[in-house]
Image (cartoon, rainbow, N blue to C red):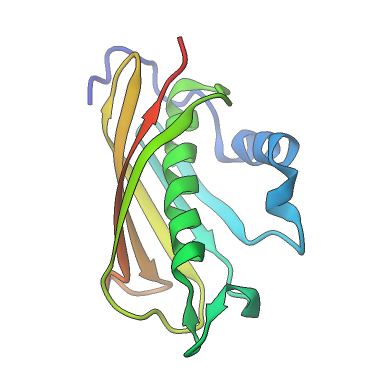
Length: 146
């Protein structure tokens, strides 16, 4: 990542939370599921708060819930780095599901691999709370508007 191109710490976790609440109110339907725990230049850590609505048959956290955690965590890491550029959009996101997560909170940790003028690339590791055992790993690319 070219850290010289964009100053660190453009938005704090609290500022990003306020922006998401304002710009994406659908994330708050039925209560807050995704919580920003930390955000800094090139980095974000988010929590998917366990709720029965995130379960799939068989009693594990669903793939779509983990996919949303990965996508949102990458978005937060980018906003923390470049500021409130809400029209930053996902152009690609690949996820590998490693094992079935128990019905509990999951934590996504993102680090940006590249942050350029036109795109950002990052990876997200998703683990159960209190564990380093991956349940999913995602890589993604976002387009940055001019």
